[in-house]
Length: 259
Image (cartoon, rainbow, N blue to C red; front, side):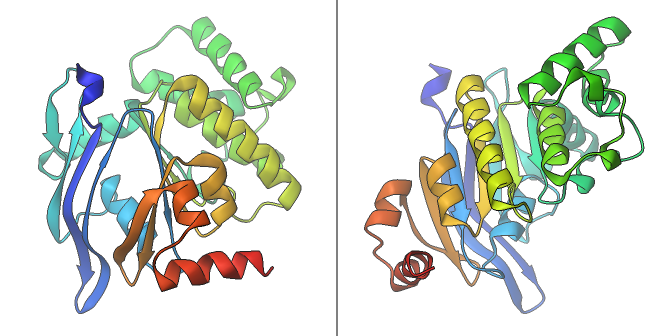
């Protein structure tokens, strides 16, 4: 059965910038429908790892293989640039911390969602617009805002629009880089609840980079803790947070508890 196989296999992935280590010797499997949180302080290597996994950066060494819809594994870094771009438009999504990095700010909300559909070949205007309306509703944006540009939206609305843009093509894997960063606490809570529901309903696999352990607990089943570019602890999220084994992880957890 294909579901008995990982969706993503990562082996000894490393990225360096001269003598500086971005990430080093990272190995893990990601399973269909699994949400993996990558946590650590600023500079721990988590964003470098995410950018390598999503092929936005090429690693210095190591390998990552993705299981395509036909069941065959493809080595990501041996794909052509065109193949990787197509994968990002169809089977993958990438939710940026700053929504402006993931949206076209000068076109309408509906066009932002519809562009992803056009990228996979849909040319029927009525169907594209109806799907955009449906997805705006799913992320709690009213149909009356479909023709408004994202620059007229609040930060939380922009982030929800970016989520709709990424999920409209039915991806199997979504990368998230601090998806609630920079938002007010009340807006964060609403967005997290929305994300958790969508991930569960759609059966998405996701890799979520965050420094916020509360975000990791709410969204993920499994967690990797990074320090100085290396994974120092991994396990089920509740286990890692409730019974951290490494001193660094203990320090991270205790600093949250003291706030």
